[in-house]
Length: 356
Image (cartoon, one colour):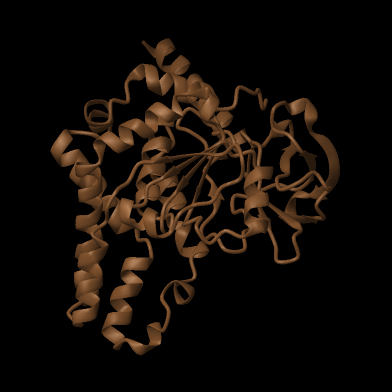
């Protein structure tokens, strides 16, 4: 018994020492206003030394990455001019025998399209990484100019899934580059009711919060078939790259992105972070014209509707769990996302690369 206890202690200390000594690189890439790439990193546990940065125009193989700079770990950032590869550039960081995942700029600069970004790059609970450049999300494309259309072509987007209501889509049609297929999966958000409340002056911030909460529940309950069809499209390898689009790219697209990332095994808290990015990419003052002409309480209500909040997302996820038992049950029974479909999605959307 004493010997078994000693063995257990040795194993425990070995595990603790292994966990404590494991080096992890967390990194992000942003594009600044000058069009340069800003690569940021954190290495844990804290240490000094060199970190090597690699770049590539393609993320299809680790062999494509070439060294471009060696920096001190404690610098925590480095700035690079675009290498002329195009819209996207991919980076890898290495130190102490550890390699980061592939990182790229998540937000894609557009002239007239709001909230255009990539949902790749996140890690799953099994430490697998979602591929970049496979699924994008955005706001309305009806005002896209030639620069925006050229960006969409360079990103290689083959399929646009349009979640706007039939009425909205008819009033503001999309004109897409040749070869891009648009699939409409219309979902109404009760815009007429919202507009009427605003015009009547009977809309407060509390009303706005209830409106968004009820709207989210209505979307998941009333449009199961549309979400199910979205997953059928995602299970066709020829559909990629795909762009999910709607008015502001934050509500219907936000829920669609949640279900996709959840199916891939991305943790809830990371999906929350992706959902919350809409607050950084939507300028409310440009969405609502003459907003300053409304009473202050109406402006507060509009802000609540036009921004995202973790409470909105968690409200509908709690609803799903209470009614269906779990998100998995809802997706399997309501959206027909079977184990087979999940395996296909993981085949198409997770990197099959060895970062060790």
